[in-house]
Length: 263
Image (cartoon, rainbow, N blue to C red; front, side, top):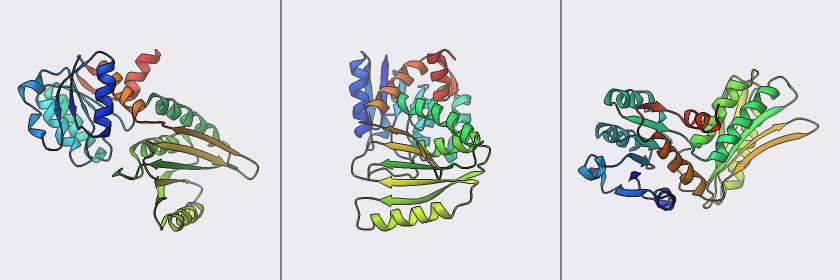
């Protein structure tokens, strides 16, 4: 399969390694200084493009790729306010899009378990839920796209919850880290029982940790996913590209995983 990479940072390079290891060919790379590559003859020769850039450029990159007739797998987060408009443009172009806030298979399984757990805890009022995410200091959006997805799913699955709210952003490596953590904890404690508190932490080069905690006076139930590297995200993105190539339309990672799992 021929793949075009849009974005060539740490994730782009990890995707390149995985793709080459699975026997695919990288036909072109469009990085920050080479957006003009999108739509070129070389770019159009790709069976699929994989996009990992920035919140401000993702929507435009997807539209350009769709106009070039190249299906897009997008792992950039922070641009979803434009999702419906972009999805409509992709459909009209006759191309394809699979966007996800996280392509890790382990995260997908964690989300499945989190939804089930939330549906149970919604019937047990003695438990109070919280969601905590930790990422590297270079991440531009907070809470993470994965945390937003998980929070939405928890609220939808727990009949006692009506919304989620970010309790705070904590830069753990900074001098203000302890104060920020304490303030986030206080804000979370002040929220009503119909609200799921979400805390975003930034520390070093952490690839990603997402933890759901259900706490009561007598015990604590914890569900957590911790990425060891970017490899899991890269592998999932390449698997998505393999699945998307040759299709038309707009899909989610649920569509892909339901087919893979035979559901």
